[in-house]
Image 1 (cartoon, rainbow over the protein chains, first blue to last red):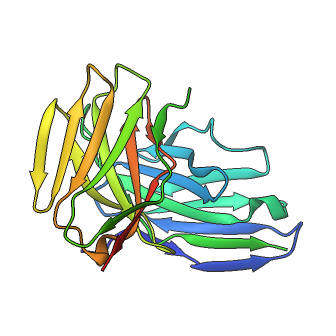
Image 2 (image 1 turned 45 degrees about the horizontal axis):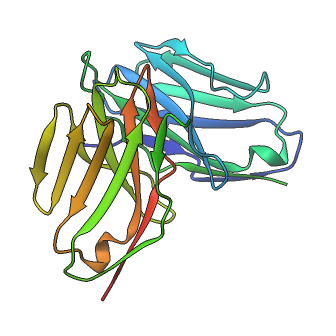
Image 3 (image 1 turned 90 degrees about the vertical axis):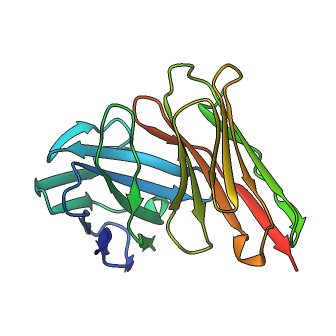
Length: 115
Length: 108
């Protein structure tokens, strides 16, 4: 079975440019999560969706960040305009859910470098 | 107080020894607990989940949960150099919260 798919795997862009990261969750998973990981701050939850609907975006750092999930098999995280402090590894994860089980499976990540 | 706390390490153990990784959490209402392994440059990989007090064993891995004391631990028996990685503790509170991770090195 295919796991979570992310693209691109690496992105290098200049400050001020728009960046779009893409994610395809595991088929049948109801939840999709976007995380950011840096050495300083560790793994941070940015936003998550349930059945394509954004549930909690309180982790999105500022208005420059936006995320969409137009259907069950695709999500995007957009940064516009990008800044050097956005440099990080961005992970997408998906899971099924009951009230207790919450096992998340991560994609390979997108390493973003903003110069 | 951080929601999920781990000793950042590094923790170094000799090959064949037991590695013990610890995690504490702040929310008594938490019900779901997870251990992820992350190799350098790779994504987190789920290795254990535990939902009730006590021990849960899976191969060389044992997860231990004590809700009264608000801690969860991971024991790795017969540690191998391939176990060298960062281990992330995760707790479902309202959503998933991760600790900063403990870096484990297993020396041959």
